[in-house]
Amino acid sequence: MTVRNEFALERYRYVLQQIHAVNENAHRFLAIYQTLATALVSAALALFVGYRKWDLAPATARGGVIGLLTLATVVAAFTGTLIVVGALAWLDYRNEECDITDEVVGPGFRKRPRPGNFLRW
Image (cartoon, rainbow, N blue to C red; front, top):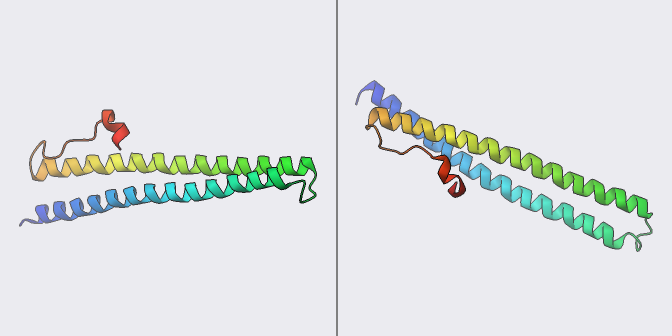
């Protein structure tokens, strides 16, 4: 095996590892978001329902609910940004994978990702 082919093989392994890591991170981010969103919305609902029993002023309860829902929105925006950046990284790695296989194995060995398949990603 030539040095060029060995390097291409190692690079291909690295790209596949990165694609796998990007996929795992997307699932991890979604799981963390689901947990945080559930906790924040539950806390807002508990505050909304129980503020009288806890002898809180309505303005304080309203501020707390708005604060918790704002925090849930910020968490959603941050998670969405992480997912979009991960998808762009995935596309870049996938295209690099196709470049490597086109050069080493032959053109068309791996099909490039198509925007039409976005819903499957």
